[in-house]
Image 1 (cartoon, rainbow over the protein chains, first blue to last red):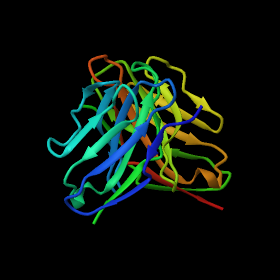
Image 2: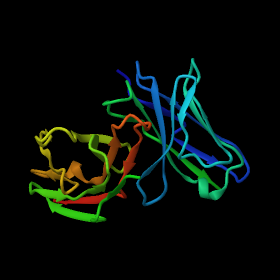
Image 3: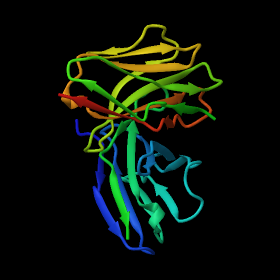
Length: 114
Length: 117
């Protein structure tokens, strides 16, 4: 059973460009979480999605960040007009169900904004 | 809001010895899960062990075990017979089971474990 897939693994963008990060959950998992890890920090929750629904986006910055999880295809975290402070590792996790289920993490996408 | 505190930024252990990593948390809830994740230099997040708060028995996974003290809100990780491959950042994490939230994980800042040959 393939694990959580994320791509790209590394992404370099210049200030003002857009970044698109993709996450394919484990087979059979319909719950996706996005977390951000700044250097020397723990992971911070950003958003929780189910298929076609954003359940909780309380950790998302109010501007420039958006996420989706369409009926078909991967979940996408989109960052518009990136700034240097967006440089971080972005992790996706998936779970089979919500209650009582462990979240399994992907390998992360390292975003570097020049 | 829940908080997770890991008071040891760095720890070291001799190969084959035992080490304990500390974690405390703050919550007003009675139902929750606690986790330890390992992040090696590859930066992949790997689940090490999990504990349900309603279970009094401490979880164990091979060389990894926890000491869960619910009243003290403490959740330490013990690694026995340490191996070179155990060297990594270790994160303690909390997840509510109240049903009101999204079951997001709240992480501590991590403890960097070095294993000395």
